[in-house]
Image (cartoon, rainbow, N blue to C red; front, side, top):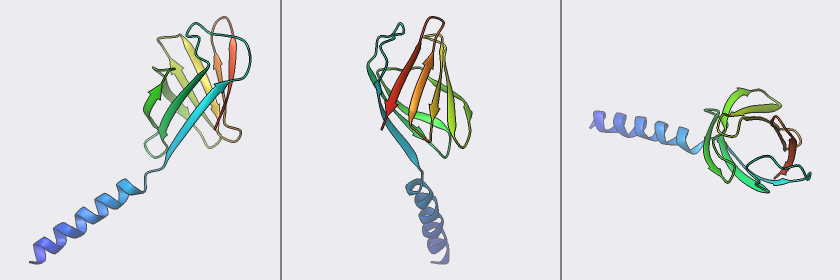
Length: 107
């Protein structure tokens, strides 16, 4: 009986950690008129702030987090050959390519 209580206690602790994960879901819309090769006007991403990983990406895909700080997240995209910066204070996403700079407002 004591072992069962211990197992239940451990299970509850593990489950509570899952419930407390903090995700950042952003929907971003292109603000300026420059277009990079992918031609997306909007995109969506879900980022796990605890593990610092991208959980889901829609439209603009293949980003990987290369740096994470208190105020910004920096991404690299080897498919489109771009890098991006998400400003966490303003929720603006800037994509830098060889030929243009695209700015998105996110919410």
